[in-house]
Length: 260
Image (cartoon, helix red, strand yellow):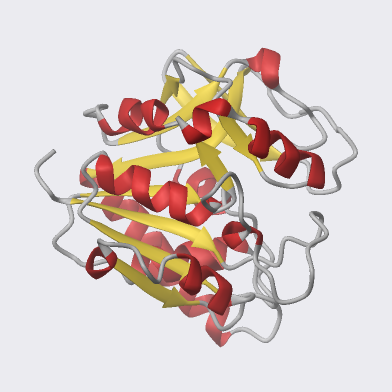
């Protein structure tokens, strides 16, 4: 990699479903001798990402403390989302992307509460396409919690997420099909990156000037861009844990791939 890739890691949410003590961000919780944010940041840096922008909001101090003694801390920057309890996750994405350094030719977007094996990160970084998304096949989908990628032979065209967590299946597929489950890792470069930045600049301005919350999920912008996204199916799909529940934390403690 040529050193022109930056990563945005989203860690601003309150994570109310997981049931942690007040003031503790789930991205910073101790797991198997590390934490989700520390594992993700270290994995990205080892795989060639030159700078990381961590978006913090709720319990920001705990996320910052989890990275405080990192040997490569000069490559980690914190972006504060002061509206984490007002606007939705898409606003955190806007805060992160609009604060990245302009010289970067590629931006990788990751969720701070998503534990990924390093090989999966490497797979995505090796894709030389304008827009790519890491997936695992549809057999892993849990309709009550999965972000579902849909599309056709041209690639991923949209994502769906049941915010009610009741397991509602997609009803708007049309000519498209379910391709797989999003593993919450994206890459944008070239014209796709310019479109992403322009959209998020406008979105952030409108959110800050409005009187009502913008409660959009993190895939709102990606859906709105309307560009085909190359699916990258993880070679080791079991090496991913999305931390939403206490059982997810227990699974992470038992995950041998996380500590190897």
